Length: 285
Length: 177
Image (cartoon, rainbow over all chains, first blue to last red; front, side, top):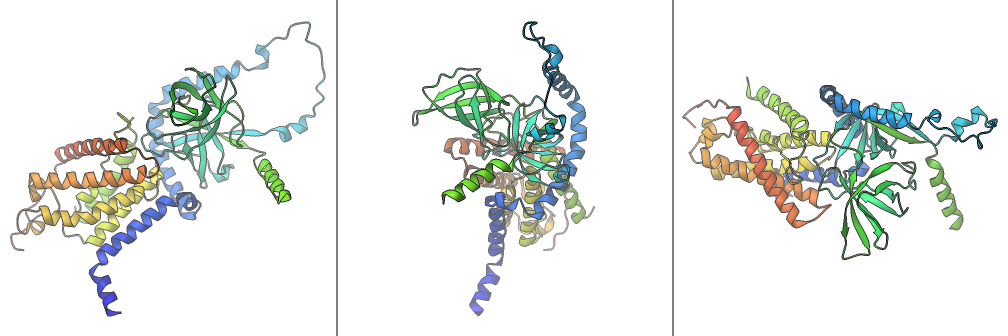
C-alpha cells in the first residue's frame, strides 16, 4: 500500500497528464453522445453570444454581398409567381377550388425558418456553423439547413435555448442523400476534408453518363430535405480503379465563405416514416 | 501589471485572435491552417508549477474547442505540449539560474537559438498531435505529413511576427538564486 502511494506521489505529474489527456480523448471520441449534455448547451449559448457580437461587425462588411444574393433569391421567387404565367386560352377554364382553406396547414410538410448565421468556420477538418435560432424558436436536432438561394449547407446537430449548431456540408461525418438531376441516379454527398466548397458524390455507378456541370440535387429520401434542393454542380469526375463507382467532385452551390443568413427546414411529418418503419419491424419480428 | 492579470488578458486575446482572425481568414491553401493561440502556454512563467501549466493548457485548449465545436481536440494537443514544456526548458536553458533571473521564456532569457528550438519543437509537437487526432478519422499519410510541416512553418512565422511586434519587457530580476 505504501508503495502505491509512493508511486502516485512520484509520478503525480505524469498521472495528472494522463488524466487530462483521458478527459480530452473521452470528449473527442464521444462527441456525439456528449453534445446532448447540459454542459454543451450552456457552452453553445455563451459562444453563441460572443459570436453574435463578432458577427454584428462582420455582417456590416459583407452587407453588399448579402444584399446581392438576397436580390437574386428574390428574383427567383418573383419568377415563380402565378401572375408570371399565362395559360393558353383553350385550356383556361373557370374552376372552383374545392379544397377547404382550413386543410392547408395539415398538408404542409416543410416549414422554413429564417436564421442569422453568427458563427462559421471553413478551415477546420470538421466545420460547424452557429445560427441564432434555438429550441425556444422550435429548432430541434436533425433538421436540414439551406442558404439564401435554397441550396444545402448542412444539418442541425446541437440546440441550446437561442442558438443552434449546424454540421456543415464541410464535415467528415456529413452524409447527404443526393441525386443527379439529369439521370436520377442516387448517391451520397460526403466531404474528404481537403478543399472548401468542394464535396464528393459517391456511389454513382460507372455505367451512368455524367458530365461536368451536371446539377446535383437532394433526393428527398431523408426526412431532412425536400426533393430537388440544389447541392452543387459536377466539377470533376474521377475514375476509381478499385470499385465500380465514380468519385465525383462537386462544387457546392452555397458559398461557405459568405454565409450571413440561412433557412432551417422544419419537417412537420418528421417522426412519421420512422414510426411506420418501427411498427413494420415489430410486426415482422 | 501583475503576472496573473497579464496572463488573463493574454488568454482572452489569444483566444479571440485565434477564433476571429486566424480561423476566419480564407485558407491560403488546404494544407495551411495558422495557429497561434498555444503561444500562451509557451509564454507562461518559468516558476509556475507543472500541474498549473497543464490545467491552464487544458483550459485554453478547451476554450478554443468550444468555439470550433471539436471538444477535446485542441485540449489534448495543449496538454501534451504543457507536459513536455518543463523537460524542454531544463534541456535547453543555457545559463545557470536563468529561470530565476527572468520571468518567462523569451529570446533574452533563454538565448536566441535555444528559444527558437523550444518554439519549433513545441509547435511541431502541437501540430503533430492536432493533425494526428484529426487524421484518425481520415487517413492519407502524405497529406498528413505535409499539413503538419507547412502549418508548423506558417505558425512559426506568425510567432516570429508576434515576437517582433509585441516586445515583452523582460526585467532582470536577481542574481541570487
